[in-house]
Image (cartoon, rainbow, N blue to C red; front, side, top):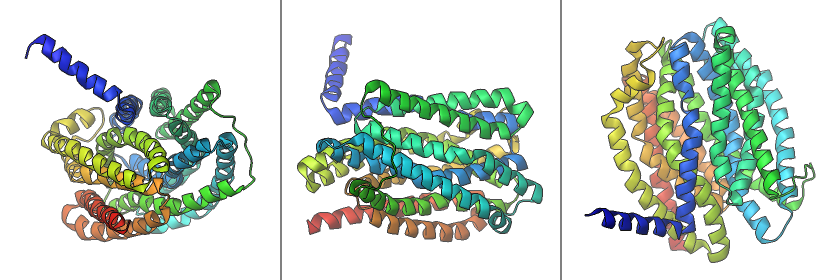
Length: 447
């Protein structure tokens, strides 16, 4: 094939992508999301090089897992559930700014109350379930207090990101994590010798505050809506809170999985929590690149198509997405498994990181990778349920996945140590994707 033919082929492919809004938005959002997340994925590698594997890193990663669990109950929920509601409000020419402002206000008050309850009860609970010494346990509690504001900031930023996605302004939410990560790394570099692991906590909080400020500025500059903060529960806000509450409880069950995993890893000796976390961070790189762009664009476009063309069109879109994702994720998974050891050495084989831990991190990552494709597929099925507002079903299934993960952890960790916990996670994703596919087929037969 000559140069002219290659150029013509590329030109046709580019035109085909650009002419399809869903494909174009997915392509561009994935690109921007990759840029936005790329800087953030550097953070664990710098932490590994500067702090290594110690009891202090165990305490921080355990704390960070709790913070992600609490914020993960709410932040992903509001970012996804708010999309069909904003889309519906725009279609009906309703006051979107009032609705979004109400969500911000109610969530703010609710989270403040929740944080007070969590911080009051968490210390005696941790002394029972986690096997840390008293010094490490005190460090965990102090870090929890320092990082508590991060939960509120994450939730508010997610509400605004979901709102922008509903307006199909995907680039700004996708790029915003890069600014958060830059602030985080800057704080960590400047204060690591002074504050130790506390500098990591400070960096995360200030970085998320900067990201929130950027999203607020974007909404104001683009004049998309006028935020009107209010605690008044109008019918639409009540419906949103009811729909979101089911998924929130479901996300609590799903979000408990990493906390359960880290808690069980603490039973396996010093450094086990850190090994699990480092492998999980490697695993989340391809997962995030694959899902972040897809989630934003598919939820927005699917919501619009659902209100225009109905349920059957949505089911057809879901099946197409699953086929494409399956075709893409399989070769990526096989490639990463094949070259996992060189990647682990490049990522963590520097600084004070204990080199004897590299092999362990590598094998834990491999077992996580077995669930790469099933996880992405299960997420696509979940997004369909969100568009349909079937969050009650998601809640029931989430409890099932949590129970299954605990059972599999107990069964596998004794044979494969930390890697058994990672394999349990992958098996749960595989089972979830099969169950969700059967639900889709059953729903089609009923309709």
